[in-house]
Image (tube, rainbow, N blue to C red):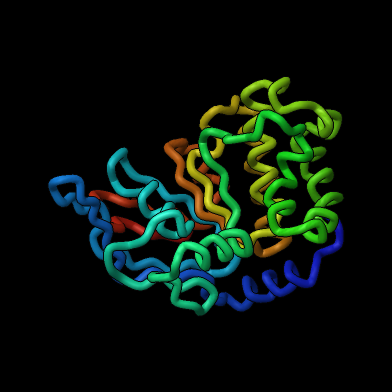
Length: 245
């Protein structure tokens, strides 16, 4: 990676100091569709700056629901969520959207690329939304990361001309375009072959270690836990285990 930005240096310092970046206190989530269905039961969780954590558990354990709450895509029914020292549990949608742009990067199992744009344009789209200055600042970093995942020769290629695995790599790089403080990943290598999965995970781990970016990743792939320094296991909407590895 190129020379660190001031933001990245501050993140590394926070990581070295073991500062808390995210705090969940007694988080409950109930969905109501004729009948109340509680999915999360009093989740308490603390993420340190620079954590590289994997979230595991059987289907229906509440992993995606928890990830959506942390990612400000959903609200808890009750409980307190604190991001970088700020209580964000009850923010209105415009404030939540602003925080998502400033703090969070997302990698989904399905890439959600924009078909009318090429590879580089898709990667830089989160920056374009924030403004031209952000897009210009991110350009060289985006090209470098695309080269790291072996897409450097395809930056001007329409994404519709890529294979599924290549599209997922584009989506992975896009998550880092805004230089997020926290990256949330839901089965990020689910559509990738073994070799490409390892390339993507190596990129994520390098960014984590060099810039202090915090990662929380949902996966069913046991091999991916080997990249983590922390494994959090959910069962029936509760934290069953939370261990450093």
